[in-house]
Amino acid sequence: MELGSIEVFFILLGGSTIIGIVAVRGGGGGGVVFTPLMMGFTSIDSFIIRATGLLVAMAGSLVSARPFLMRGLANMRLLLMAAVPYSIFGVIGALLAGYVKETAGDTGEAIIRLTLGILVIGIAALILFGGKRLEYPEVRNVDGITERLALATSYYEQSLDKVVSYRVARAPVGILLLCFVGLVSGLFGLGAGWAMVPVFNLVMLAPLKVAAASSKVLIGIGDTAAIWPYVMDGGIFVLFAVPCVIGLVIGTIIGTKIMLRVKAGFVRWLIIAIMFGSGVKLVVDGIDRLS
Amino acid sequence: MDTQEAPKPPVAGVIYGKICYWIVMLGILVAVVGMIMYFASDGHMDKAQFLDLLWDGEEAEVIWETATIDGEVPEGHWYLRALSHGDVIAMLGIAIICFAAVIGMWGALVGTVRSGERMYALFALIVACILTASAVGVLKIH
Image (cartoon, rainbow over all chains, first blue to last red; front, side, top):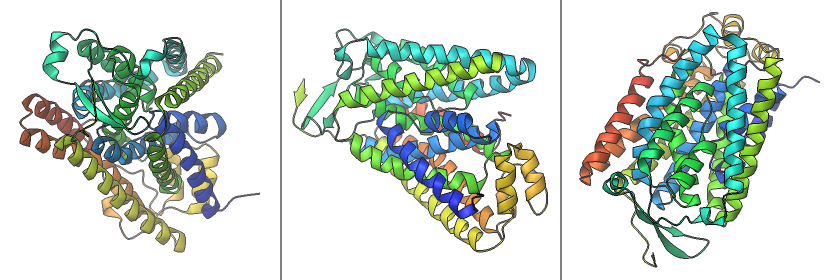
């Protein structure tokens, strides 16, 4: 049975809404769920999927920015500090992706995907076995540079019905890692919430919800730098992209409202599941391409 | 240390969040209007032919060359030249969405300057310049 354009529109709309709800609760932008699903289960050209994946991740992040920033859940200073290395290295990574594709072909892409998959599974394992302190990490020492950046602030935690004050540590290490995350994100044309959350939470010791909300907002900034060349090169097709974007935005609005109410522990488990799933998918992809 | 007094969010964050939200909403509205027009009549791209080519895994260039009226592969802000079709209006909506963070970051810059955060104003300026360069086509990824 062949589906008409209107039926296709509504199927994509429904599927993207579900992806949006899941992604925002995991601190991701939707692209990391959307892109592997589409690449794994459809025959659509990967350039079109990557372009649309970036678009849906970006749109979902831009919509969720308002509630996260207005409630103070996303740390604006942390975002601006992180956006500089993430954006610059995201563009460098995307340029590198073009170079690798031209010089190393399918083998180069397979090795990169395999390496990334192993890395993502490693980070997920680190969160899983890292202990419960990660929801509200204890900051004992703050270095001079982080102190001067004045990243400490507070937010109202709805699930606890109180204001939580927190400090952030190790900003220089975080900046270095964000350079790497930006580079990786640009290489694959994916949002990088799954990598940014651990950087903010495990390395810089921001509370898990702050890390998830900040990463979600940061995806919108970084992906904007990467999406324009796809738009200008004809990678976006409205009949495919519009229902996906609208679905992701609807899903993000629903997911954001839920995220503000649920306890941080649930978000932690969701992030672990998303990271393991993405990592396994990337490893399988890499092995397939190598063989 | 925990307190019960609700903290006030930073101005730059509020400006960025509001600008992004409303521009995305405007973009979605334009895209939806464009899609309704596209479903009601013929567009710049043939719907049935596009879906066939898409499910067949054809490359973007092939789809543009085969399924559009003029058979041209788009370049730059191509949608501004063919706004008489519903699908191109929908593409304009997507472009508006893509502009949200560009404008939002310039707004955040104003917010950081107003609140006297010099270092963060510099960060916002750098990011705003990167996003603008990408939006005007200076940064070529492919």
